[in-house]
Figure 1: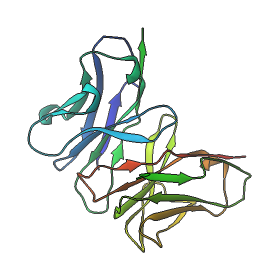
Figure 2: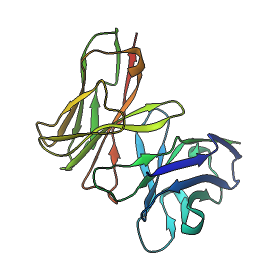
Figure 3: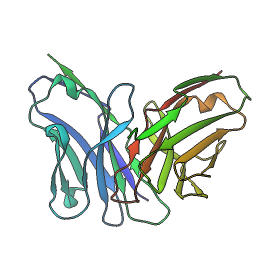
Figure 4: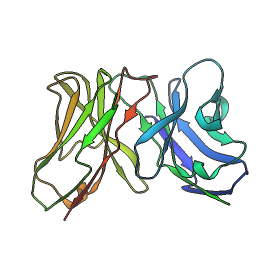
Length: 114
Length: 113
């Protein structure tokens, strides 16, 4: 069965600091991996996704993530945090099996202080 | 282009009451999904639809029913609401599965007393 583990339910950084949100997955087949962001009182929106090809994926708002098969990880990073990055972030996996859908992690809340 | 819309935005029910949540999308997507979001649990799939007239169970389907009579609409019904169904419900749609981006609505906050 596919699963996603997000390490740390809450991450706090200062404005301008590096953002690192951790995601590890479990899948018996090559996965498709996603990061979604949820701003307060809103629905989720896609930040970036990995399907095939280049393992370093760039997304919106300066975020990027690297697929590391050997580590079964897909960590999300941003070099310099902005106050507007404060939100909840969800990692998700799709394992390309019929009848399944996205499997979401439990989420990581990012706080950014000035 | 409104994307995915959900009605209502907020609702309070008493135990045993019924209600229907409406999701509408104007992107001509084949696939539609209902999730529930609970604190510390992430999003869990309730039901989904791969096209008009078809529905399938997700991870947590008990206590819910769905219908997809029109391609653009996906209805989620609670026949007899329970306090355990207090949650935020999100609808999403996508052109296809797997690599396709899911587009989410703004959510419906449901409180069952």
